View 1 (cartoon, rainbow over the protein chains, first blue to last red):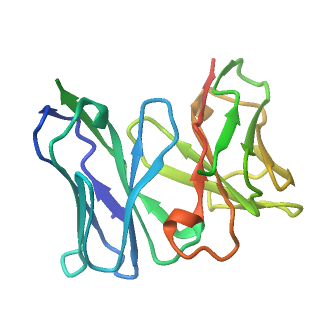
View 2 (cartoon, helix red, strand yellow):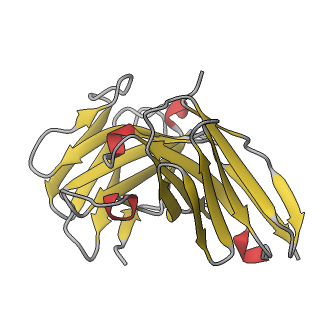
Length: 112
Length: 120
C-alpha cells in the first residue's frame, strides 16, 4: 500500500465550478499536510499547508484535513482557467524533506 | 520569494553518455538541497539529500555511483547521471532549503523548475 493515494485524474471542469481534490494516506504519524501546484514542465510550488486536523482557507482555496479518516481535501471555488495545473498533495511527520511523501498528482483543466 | 533555478531545462542524450544537471539557489544560501525524480503520472520520489561540503545521502534503491551529487557551495548542487540509459529518462527536480530550523513547510524547501532528461 502506498503511503499516499491520490486519483491522478484527469479532471475537467467548466470555469466557475467548485473543484474538489482529495488524498488518502495510511501513516497516522503524518502531521503536516501540503498542497502543491505544478504547471506543465515546471517545478511544484507550495499552495497551502495545514498542521494536524482542521480547515484552512486562502482566497478561493480551502484545505481540509480529517485525521480520523486519514483523508485530506483541497477545494477550489470559482475555478479559473489559470487554475489548470497538476495538484499534488504531500504529507510528512516533520519538516525534513526526507520524510515528505507526495501523491501522484491530479491533473486539472478548467475550461473557459 | 526564494528562487531556485535548474540548468538545463531539457536535455536529450545518447545512451551511455553522462549528463550533468545544475541546481542553483539564486537569492539565498541553501544549507541543504534535495534531488527528486518524477516519472510521468507518478509521484515525486526523493533520490538524495545533499549538504554543502559533505557527501550526499541517498534514498534506498538509488544507485550512488550512477547518480553523482556534488554540493560544492551554498548556492550550487549538481546531479550527474552517469552512463545514462533510456530508463533514466525522467523529470529531475531539485529543491533547496534555506534554513536549518524551519518553522513551517513554507520555509522548508523551494523547488526548481525541473529538468527533463530524454535518453535515446
